Length: 165
Image (tube, rainbow, N blue to C red; front, side, top):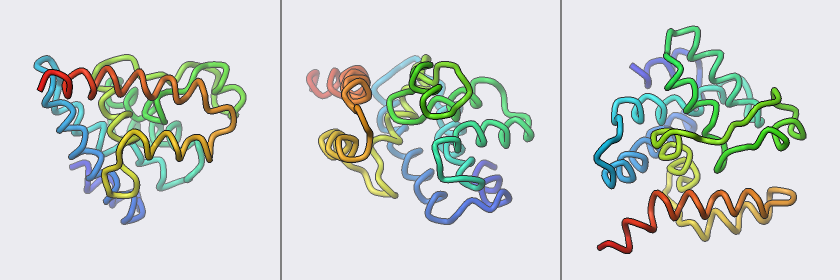
């Protein structure tokens, strides 16, 4: 149903491919956890970039929430869409970026998984954390806080499980 919705909203094909790749990566990350809502991750991962059917700017998360809300998605899915950008955007960062003043930092395990899966997919190809850090250093002004949140998220969702193996 989510793929059909992306198509109905005229989401570009490359964005749909990206959403599918993020879904696959999110499910790999979710496999590390026992208490995760896989259906919620599926919906959130597939719809996280639906706002790119309207804009490719940072406001695509806010636009995505508006679209998903019109189709009756619940707050859990809407929160994933809204909080998926990077490793989260703080209230003060949001204000500087021209977003509605609030925190866009992922809170739940499912929100964190989708946000980080999105970080670890470039286009439709999986990348590693070093790739993301280098990209952010080049593209995000004053990226230190963002990179610190990214590393914390990676440690929580990926590294802790790699070390156990």
